[in-house]
Length: 149
Image (cartoon, rainbow, N blue to C red; front, top):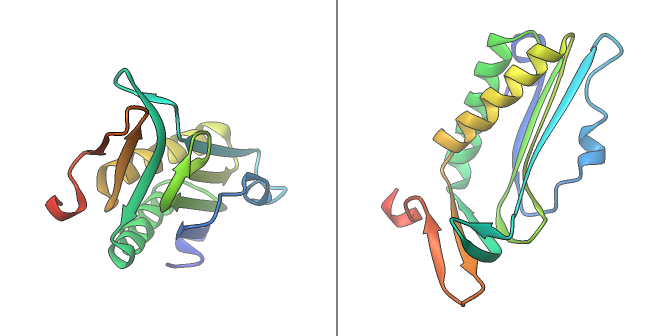
């Protein structure tokens, strides 16, 4: 991934390790009037069913390439100094962070718009699959299963 796409420092990665928001908050510089941090986390329900954990699987190389493309497109569209996205893989328990996006920009509107764009494109384009585990012991792929994608 280009470290300075469109003037922004751009970082994207998949991780089996917990996401540490405090590390992401160091983004940007004194020229930035806004730093937004979006985090998605495992919630305890989906469509009325009690969820106890999630399992994320990714097509690693393809997911990293696509995440790089999303971030590079975003950095080219908005004036940013820092853009970073991390998506978890593996088994996550309730409350754990599944995705984090940090955007540093001169103005808040820019930071919010860029962050929203990144999460929507991640949800739409990234080859990462989610399997929910329910309180009744059943599991279900949300969206197509990896073998169907």
